[in-house]
Image (cartoon, rainbow, N blue to C red; front, side):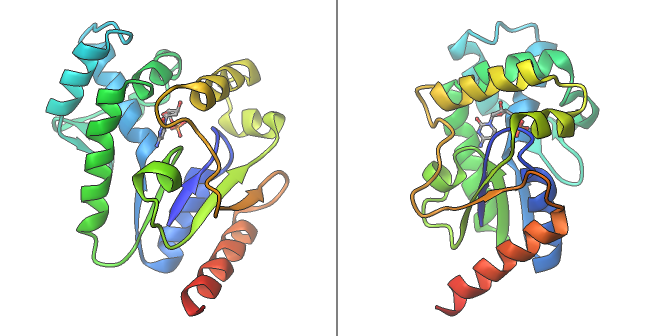
Length: 204
Ligand code: DC
């Protein structure tokens, strides 16, 4: 199942809950781009240097569960810092980085015993165009900023622009995606709606 949408739209919480409810695996692809960013900053690389960051990304062992790690080093607590929030859009716009991450995402899903709930920006459009169900979550900017806590509206709005206007795999709604506005809705309610859609899809 592919779940896409902008920052703070509820993707992670909804996707994690869905995976638990369905007994499926879960993959947070944003955490992978963040992990590459943490490592690039740790190595003092210029995140605009696409070649250097791309080469580095291809050489990293990244795990996302149970915690996010890079080459065995736990980076979970470093993923959402201000420096990473600022630098991650450049890393995610790097075609070489995306190529490496997409390959890993496909490999991950291919070895899971049951299904996988994958959340990100380009999951339905690029990574898994044949996903059984494609979901696009949205919410108002004010609510998304509230959910993100420390990251203010202006930072989220800046990332929205970067993520939707970049040349490679921009955030876009897939034509067949069901669109759910999560503003003012609780997680259980959104999850229930998606499970119903999945059941309808599977039985049709
Ligand atoms: O979902 P998130 O905020 O943790 O994602 C971090 C950044 O990574 C975000 O700015 C967009 C980018 N991203 C992406 O380009 N493609 C994905 N599949 C997932 C995230």
